[in-house]
Image (tube, rainbow, N blue to C red; front, side, top):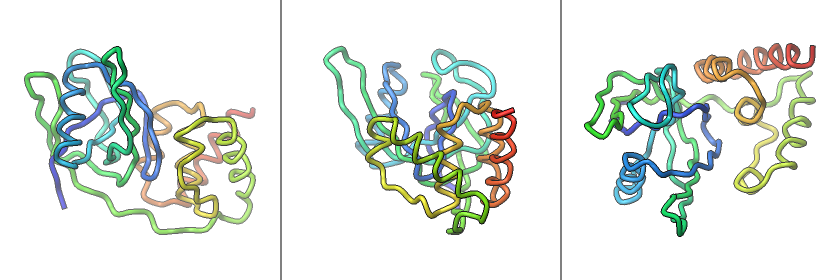
Length: 193
């Protein structure tokens, strides 16, 4: 199934069920948020391959996450605070750039990962994630948790750990949760070394 959505080009990677607080000030993204709220539509979060978050449309990776605006608040200074909640991974099929530099893309929604328990030997990753989240503030501390679910735990660790963005993107591209868990463990070993 394919749908057309606006793309939010960022220097971050969001997974399904993740949360992403943002401050919006660029006119193209203020208009995008307004349209998404009015029409109850989603926005695609994609990692920038080349370019910047502001100014001309950036070149992005092809796999991203469809998300919805779960919270918004307009501040007195005109900046809009929003929180995106990741829903489903997608792959970009084609895209066009509007005059205001907003990227519109036709995307194919990818199947959700099957629910898989934490693999034996990876329980320490659950403890690490619990420790990280306990040190954060909302929306991270108020989001529903699934510490028994391999997909949820691996995705939150990837989002929150100081991994290279290209490594995070490579992990988002993987369909197999257990393979993602294994590769994440390898990256953690490199950080500790």
